[in-house]
Image (cartoon, rainbow over all chains, first blue to last red; front, side, top):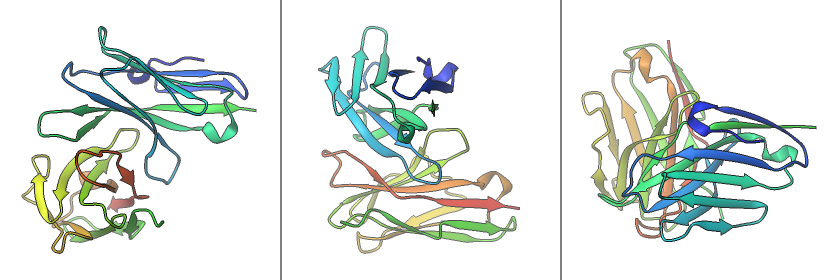
Length: 113
Length: 114
């Protein structure tokens, strides 16, 4: 399953399938991007980050892709599990003033058994 | 290692009343952030501290909001008087410093203003 982030805030996938969550960022000067996972009643939890000099970074079951040409970021989650159900936020670091993270609206991912 | 601690977890108050939120960051983290999160939205930065100095408070509504981090460790965010529109989750986060930027978030305080 795939979402377009700000324009489709919910995504449902079957357990075991791969999911792709998309995010469009606005500032071409942003140099650092982070994906956060937020479960109900909890604060956002760091998943994976990527710097602007990279276009791909892999973690455990997660991959982040960065396309600076079109200012697009995506999070791929492989072999989704029920525990992946959460809201996912992308955040961009606006370098002016240092460490000013700007969060997107978020996408709610639901894993169906 | 303990994470970021916030209290209270929930607060319900009448409008025009004062309210305060407390945050204890991860030990050794010099940078502390307060965010506001409205339902269905991403967190929005209110204020950032480097040790005890507020280095970015441009988004803090200073007519009613105030914050302090007197000894460069724990911090308090206050609203006086609270308005209906202040109902939200107030998140605290900390990081080692502004260069090593992974921010660790607390569970937040959910404020309801009636």
